[in-house]
Image (cartoon, rainbow, N blue to C red; front, top):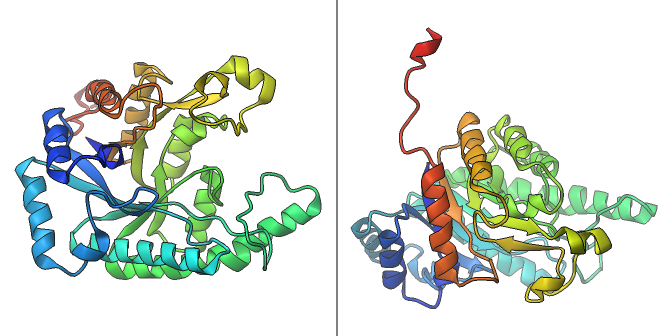
Length: 323
């Protein structure tokens, strides 16, 4: 298991400066944005696709700093009811998979996307309850008529290229919790799995350790985002956790994304790492910094500090005491 970073918070820096900095603070892997909301500040997907020389240059830069690519990231909404927006997101995702294949990167991270609630609607619709009954009908439409046909085809594309697709379980997307993640995997193929980001699960009240075990039992964790969340009970007791308050109005929010260690203590993160090992995950812990109470660099450095004490650097030895 190694420590990685999604490089988006360093997007204002050149890739040369960003990877030199990450090398300096002890990072082992990078997750590179190639489209969608992560943008492509460090890797121009269209420019580098099918360009052997440009890909070699990227490899040389990363090799110079002892970094590997844990995943290519293109988070967008390929199920959007606006056909142009959906087509653009689909093209980004398919090209990211093709580029991952060319770069020998095994994983692309993304969202499931979110459809409208019915044909002809113009806005994605996140259904959170089965009543009134038109909501249950809308949810069935989203899964059966939009998501499963799309993701079945996308999963075949991923399998053709030998690349895993790691979906971040994210509210305001169709797949936002572990049972939905498993349902999509079972409806498609094993290339579809989770980019397990605990930050979105904490505020939903999901037990992250149990969720790791649940998806791990199905070999359904393809990538991991190291990102914390703190629930602020004084606000949550009044208005709950479905909070539309601006992320920059920190004092009035029910919860905030926090740097590793500022939502849950170090012992919890050691439990996360240990449970990931128990279920067979040995990939990167890719830090995603979205803590509005500190700077990107400080947030990344504090996260690396905690994870450096939590990760195991060696493989398990023989259990001599059990013989």
